[in-house]
Length: 408
Image (cartoon, rainbow, N blue to C red; front, side, top):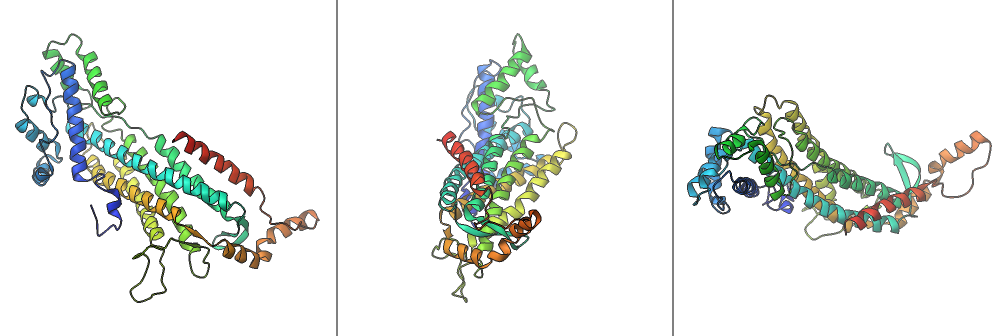
């Protein structure tokens, strides 16, 4: 895939595409049908994979307008094209929201796994940078102005902390299946089980839900049709990512200004130039990462707003708002993660320029030290005034190493 409106979109591949969504919905329906058959409710199962393909998507999308979602059109095609005892049992006991919600969770899990791989890459790069520049003097800047001395290793340790926080957030996100039936009571499955002569329909229905969820490697959970914590939690974790990556990109873009020149993105043919200004070397990766950081919070906000308006037992419009929002947020987060990994792998550090700028501004950078010394009535010592920077860096590196060991 590619997107003229979002350069770099192809890095996300077919993640959260229409084809991927179809595949995820097939998996959900298949897991449910198989579970019905294993429980003795359905007389058999059929293979749904391949019955509906990419060539059908335009027609499915057209027909979906009539129902407000694509599931009824898909179910009609599956039942029409499937052969075997289980064909008529496709989707029995489910509702459209069950299929859509669970398939979106599957796609978001794929996005989270992609981001996890990029995070591992980023942590590895940042550990190397932090070790290499633990003692590299640089001017600390607050509110755009010189503040006190610090080290570039302390700065990258800050970046590293943000990336590790993203990993923690993603590790905590819930991944439940959604199986609730028309209004979250599973009444249709219980009734089907009763009519098929099952001795304890409610117990068997619970088994079916657990079986189908297990087949999808998701957590069995009570129906959550209008409790949208799943999507807001995943969105918040992804935005934690774009926040952290945006912070890195902002620092790189600022420090790569010609008048500062302390950092530079790796040179790549065809990237960052200008057709009329040959001297230009624009920090394109940083620009694209910042773009994602600026737009992702609004997408998460949309999901929170939808969650707040998820009324009754099925939301009227709020639920529908989630689908394209989830798609955009997942793809943009994965692309930004990929851009950040590349940025960090190729980052060029001009440590001599960092030290030179810090020394040139040394009187300003050590003004705080002199004011503290004057307060206590003692002369300031003659060192680099870095406080506990080494201890902070050591603690962050220990956390990073624990993360890398756990991910081996």
